[in-house]
Length: 364
Image 1 (tube, rainbow, N blue to C red):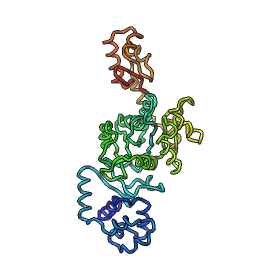
Image 2: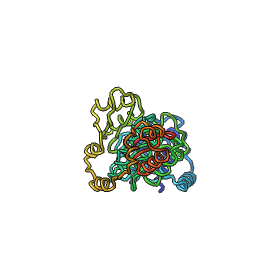
Image 3: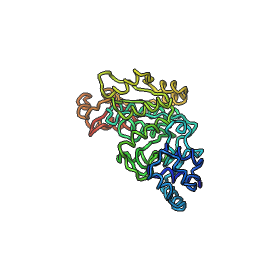
Image 4: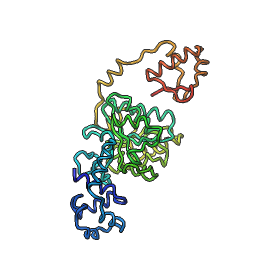
């Protein structure tokens, strides 16, 4: 407990990142020695500036640090650092691992495979539905999903994982753990704390500065066994995650897109560089050396939905771009009440989604 308090102090010191913390540990051996040790030795560490040395020479009282940690834990916020056994093993392996992590809920289980799903924030409905489908299928096969809570592909995949009983998904934030960004994702943000966790290397209260989000991407890939890219444009932040994955020795998977569609240009470029093509869940399982859960396949067959005649008529004309109910009525010849009843039934069976005011589309 004492060691964790000293680590918390060092991690939250302004200006002290992993590089400086590592340099301090090389000189002082332990975080406790950094706190209590001879401060004259700070001059032996060239990466420290004068402000760093001043903060290290005049540390906050231990009692204050303990009180601060206790207050965070009362709010459901936990802290762990790389000297603890529960620090994620996969993350510890990367060269620029965060010195410490704040989290609500849980950290990824050490013995459970993890796949990051990333892609465009302004993704098309089709890309979002593909992401949601993969999120569900990964969770069905016992694979945790990690992403960044961002709009578009990220949150779609995470929502998919949350739909599965026992599914786990983790959000790595570019701001403090006590801030939900974007705010409209507050519902899955809270659900993840029960079915996975939310994680940040930044202290509570830290705003979401632009540079933070690019830097946190190394954690998204670092926690994962592989990264799945869906609908990424050239210059997309999700490509940073893919680059981090390659540097960390992780598998990179890409859902291909039309060569004329700029929304897939970044992902298609990754394919030319050797990333693995993914068209179904089996491609990911094969790439990770895992096996498809036969129980999942048989359960899907047993639960196959049998549609009524009106439902079949409506379902047959829907696509991925969304059709207004007036067009559905016009093309099928059924009444508005009958169309609404069929659409509500198809929604309950999770075969379609509403994509706008009275617009409906297929769910992949």
